[in-house]
Each structure stands twice: as C-alpha cells, then as structure tokens.
Amino acid sequence: MKLVSLTLKHFRCYKDEKTIQIADLTTVIGRNDVGKSSVLEALEIFFNNETVKIDGGDCHVSAGDATVQITCEFSDLPSDLVLDAQATTSLADEYLLAASGRLCIRKAFKCTGVKPKEEVFILAQHPTADQYRDLLELNNTALKKRLRDLGVDEVAVQLNSNPSIRRAIWAACPDLLLGEVSIPVAKEDGKRIWEKQSQYLPLFALFQSDRASRDSDSEVQDPMKLAVATALAEPDIQQKLAEVVDAVRGKAVELAERTHQTLTKIDPGLAGQLTPEFKAEPKWNGLFSLALNSDQGIPVNKRGSGVRRLILVSFFRAEAERRLAQGGVQNIIYAIEEPETSQHPHNQRILLESLQDLAAEPGCQVILTTHSPGFANYLPIDSFRFIKKGNDGEPRIETASEATWKAMVEELGVVPDNRVRVLVCVEGPTDVTALKSLSAALHMADAALPNLASDPRVAFVVLGGGTLSHWVNEHYLKGLDRPEVHIYDNDVATYAAVIAQVNQRTDGSWGLQTVKLEIENYLHPDAVQEGLGVAVSFGDADDVSAIVGAVANWNSKTAKRKLAQHAFPKMTAHQIGVRDPNGEVRGWLRRIGGML
Image 1 (cartoon, one colour):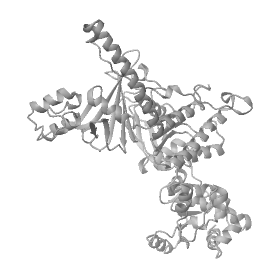
Image 2 (cartoon, rainbow, N blue to C red):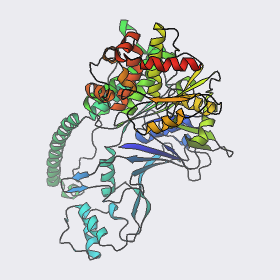
Image 3 (cartoon, rainbow, N blue to C red):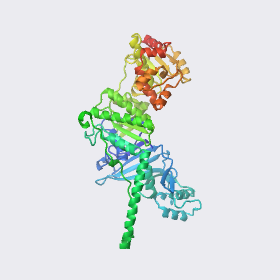
C-alpha cells in the first residue's frame, strides 16, 4: 500500500481540515512554527503512536468536540482479503473504497480524558439505504435473518460465509443509495476486515533532528528497531511465526477447553458463562532488541551528533541495497526532519543521494522537512509542499506550481547568479552533471576549453523539470535576453524540429542533438567500473542506463542518476578521447567558449 495523502483536522495548528499530497519523495518547507513537524508527527501517531504519542494538548484549542482527526488515503491496495477459510472478500466487494477508488482511513482521538481514545473509520462510498447500510456490523446469525427478511434467494449463497451473504443482499437491492459514509470498524466483519487490511499498511519510521541522545532512543536505536520490524515483515519469517502462533494457540485452547470441561463437572452454572477464546495476537516487535557498538569502546551516543546521524545514512543505503537485491515485501515510509542537521555539506549530499535512492525504489516513500537552501537546491521541484499561514492564521498547504514556486524560493532564500552570459538548455538534471563532468575533465587537459562546472557565466536550464536551483535560474534568467545553447539526446526524433527552430534564431543561440544515442553513451566503461563497481560494455546506440541497471539490479531511473553522480566524475580527457574520437564534445565546448 502506498500513502497518497494526509488530512488533518483539529490537530495542533490545523483547526480546519487540511490535506497534503504525498509522493514518492515529498519535501515540506515553511517557516518555523507553521506546522511542518506536525505533519510528520501526525503520521507517526497514525501508524505507530510510539515515538510521538497523542495527548490532550494535541487538540486545537478551538475544536468544539475535542476530537482530533488524522486521515490517510492509500493506493496500491491488496486485491483480496482472506478473513478465514470460508470467507474471502475485497474492499471493492464490501463497498469500502472512496470515490477515487482508494482506501481512506480516519483515526479519531477523543481528547477529553487523560489518555485520548482511538476510534478507526473507513471513509467510503457505501450503501446508505435502510436495511443495507449496516451489514458489516452484523454477525452471521443476524445476516442470515436479514437475508430471509428481505426475501433474497438463498440458492447461490454460502450461508457460512458473511461476505457471500452481504453480496447477495446488496445485489438484490434496486438502489443502494451509495454515498460517502464514515464506517466504524470496531466490531464483527468491519473489525475483521480492518485487522486484515492493517497488515498491509506501510511501515513508518520517524527520525527527528532534536531527539534525545540516548542509546534507547537515538539515531542509532530507531533504525535498528525498523530493521527488526522489516525483518518480521518478510514472508518466510511471517510463515514461521504463524506456525508458532498456531501451535501455541492449539495447546492453549486445548488446555482451556480441558479446564472448562473440569469446571463443568464442578459448577455447570459457572461453566456455562465462560467460553475459551484466544483473544490477542502476539506483539513480536517487543521481543527483539538490536544495537550497534562503536569502535574503540566509545558508546555511540557519546559520539558527535553528525556521526550519529551518519548511522542513518548507512542504514538508508543498506536498506536500499537490500530492497534492490530482494525486492520489498511491505511498503516503508521514512520521515526525516531536517536531514541536513549537523552534517558537513559533503555528507548532506551523501544523505540526499541515499534518500533519493530509497524514494526511487518500489515500495519506498520519503518525506522530509528542510530549511537549508543548499540542501533544497538539489531536490526535485515537484517534491515540494509549501506550508504558510493565511490571513486568518491557519496553515495553508500548497503543492509546487508556477503560482507557488516564487514564494517557496523566497522562503528558502535561494537566489540566482546574475553573472550569467549563456544559458545551456538540457533535458534533465543528469545531463547537467554529465556535461559539467565532461567539461571539467577536458578543461584540465586544455585550459582554453570552458569548465561548465565552475564558470559563473554559464547557467543550466533543465527544460524537462528538475531541481529547485535549475528552476530558479530558468525563472529569473529567461527574461535576461541571453543566447541559448540546446543540447538534447538523440533518442527522441521530435527534438529535431525544436533544434531547427533554435538554429533559426538570430540572437546567437544554437542547438544540436548528440550523435550517440544519449549523453551516457559518451561514458567510458572504465569510468563506470571505477565509479559504480559495475563491469559493462556498450555501443553508441545502446541504452546504457538499462544495461547498467540490469547488472546492478537498479531501475533505469536510478541507474541514470548514479551514472551521473559517480561515473561521469571519473571520466578523464583520455577516456573522453577514446569514446569521442571525432571530438564532438570538444566542439560543443569550443563553441560555448566562443560565446563567452
């Protein structure tokens, strides 16, 4: 299951209902005390209620009924739910899907007592017609009675299967009057469906920047707890644990039944009031504790905060590699508050790459907050969610768009470089990294060629979307009347018409498509080997990202990014000469240098 959105009502500063859309990578920005951390902590309360626990103070002071509502919407739902040996159903068959076709779960917390009480509801397009709206709350006996009271034909109905009875009753109704209903899941099959469905909910891990530095609750312990939870979610482990549960349940119920039989002989009246029942599933997470010991006998919690947070980096990278190698079995959401805290800029880039690796893999989502312009510069612009206070003091959540980008840029303090004389327009962020690396290597061998990685007179514009820094330059520089250089890959035939239009301009602009298939085809296999530890061979017309991804077990998007980040910086002028004997790349740079 994948988290699509979070809706808050009466939670802290969110008095009125507010919704934030969640993507594979989501970046929440805004001023202090505007509600960023509340987003992450609300999710922690929804999924775990452990690292952050709901309390009476979390309810908005003006909430009339003192009830906090945290609602999550999910996609990628399981097709079937097995309630027991006789009962298999689905969310669609039970009318438990929202109008969007997704699963919408609301947790409501009544904050009037010492410990807020949790109630769970499913918001769905559900029957509202009398005699048809309460079927999930009826047991088997009551369902069969309702079936007969309504005169529904029983011939094709499995009377020992509640889902079968419900389907028959609903099918016999001429108009179910479907409408949005808040369905409690506290009893009978509503409860059973929720218990089965909750097993598919994503694992959620919250990492906060200001947590206490203790072994029991630190940047070290939380990843280890998540490692245990992830291991317990593996199918083979689940099967073994289920066998243990069945064996214990069988023995316990057998002993309880013998005790009940003996009690019947002693006091039949008392025995008649008692029924053996195995009431609770075991909580395996609390049985395991895992820790990391620091080198040289130094406790990890006594190391610097930056070192401790680097343990997070290691965990993220290890988890990404594990999921790549084995495939994720349960979705995971990583929520990280200000990941750049206490980190050297170099380590910030390492952490960012780890987060992007995770977000790019199926079954993983990453949600983070940041205040750092340098960190935000390298994040994709479509990941941003901007929270600001409206005129009424209430938070407003805005998704990145032309109308909000300027406000977000000003909020973060990201500014363009006005020394720019030439705009180099490319398709995506990886093209920028590739061209900068190639030019840096050639510049070292021939100082007459410009170094696009350091020359402030050149700005890159990513036309196919990209990171925040690229958008800043595009937004602020597009009105400066600067000549443009368009360099596109050769894999899209329609680009030829665009290049032709650019070359018809009279302002000094020009464009071309690469002779080879893509920019990655100018890589030397030795640079790929050195940068990524992957041995491959390829030709000028091969899909290099797909080839590398197949060998390293990465998807093409991840492989493309890793080639840009790790293989292109390893390229030397000699390797470029081997892969580009006709001097195509050198020709681009000479022409750009002439414009400067």
